[in-house]
Amino acid sequence: MRTSRSRAIGALTLLLALISGSWTSAHRRDEYLQAARLGIDPDRVELALDLTAGIAVAEVVLSEIDLDKNGMISVAEARAYSNRVLSAIALDVDGIPLRVELVESTFPAFDTVRNGEGTTRIQAVAKIPRLDDGLHHLRYRNAYHSDIGVYLANALVPASDRVIVAAQRRDVDQRDLVIDYMLSGQPTPTARRGLSVGVAGALVLIANVWWRTRNRRREDL
Image (cartoon, rainbow, N blue to C red):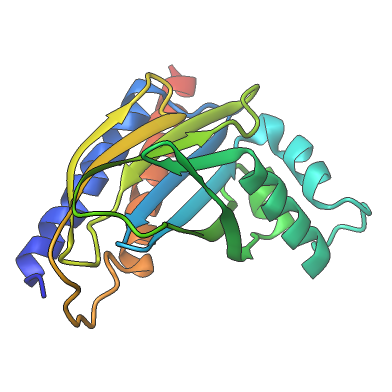
């Protein structure tokens, strides 16, 4: 089991990567921020996706979620929208396509979305076929709302000691991420499941607050 220091280093690495991505592609009022975090296990990939609409595109996003226009998001609407988002996401390992399946999703209140602060959170999972020990390549591609989307993508600290992330390679827009990782040894019991959702969510919140503050200052200039 990794030490608290290792987890802290992993958390800091993720935060720095998020801030770096935000700096190079600052979120504006007319953009739809989509921040993805991927956790790799020997037999599965866990995907956490946070979506935050800018004020200028909030109504467009809400109209795509609230299909009956009653001002509320039903269970069916939430599932339909989540699956629509996931259908635009592709995962493959060593060129083998993986099926991305919805686990759960949460949606913010309409008023917070209209204020540019509401974040939709989607959690999904994809099973990985049995792989030999050695170097493997996981590729993530997000094509959802490419007209207004801005993207962030990062690997989480692996939960399993069998997985070591060796490198992360992104395109300029961070719509495409390739994670090089080593798979080795035999599974060992562990009580930890990677960087916790709470910690990861907190890091994304910090990054979101950072780019909101920065953009407000830019607008005041």
